Image 1: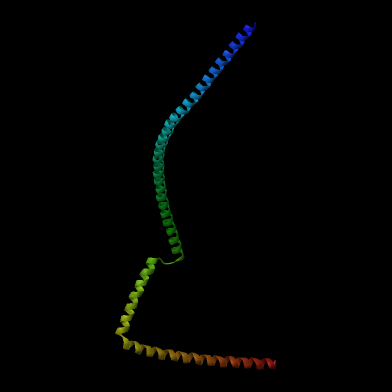
Image 2: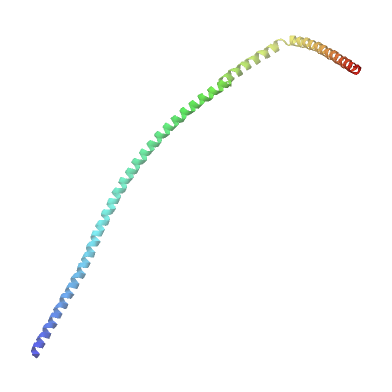
Length: 183
C-alpha cells in the first residue's frame, strides 16, 4: 500500500509537471501569436495607411475638380444674372427718363435741346444788336435825346393833372363841410 501511495503520488507529480509544461508551452504559443499579430497589424497597418493616403489624394484631386467646376458654373450664373440686371436697370432708366420728360413737357418746362437752341438764338440776336449799335451811333444819340424830351413833357402834364385833382378834391371837401355845418 505504501507503494501504491508512492506510485500515485509520483504519477500525480508527473501529471502536474506535464500540465505545467503544457501550460508553459501554451502560454509561449499565445505570446508568440500575439507578437505575430502585432507584426501583421504593423505591416497591414502600414499598407492600410498607404492605401488610405492614396485614396485621400485621389479624392482631393476629384474634389478640386468639382470645386473648380462649381466655381466656373457659379461664375457663369453670376455673370448672366449681372447682365440681366444691368439690362433691366437700363430699361427702367429709359422708362423713368421718358416719364420725367413727359411730365416736364406737361408742365411746360423746356428740354435741354430747346434751351440750347434758344441760347444760340439769343447769342445771334446779341451779335446783330451789337453790330447795329456800331453802325448807327449818331442816330441813336439823336433818338435818345428826342425820347428824353418827349418823356419830360408827359411828366409835366401828369404833375399838372395831379395838382388840379388835389385842388378839386380840396374844394369838394370844403363845400361838403360848409353844407353840413349849415344843415
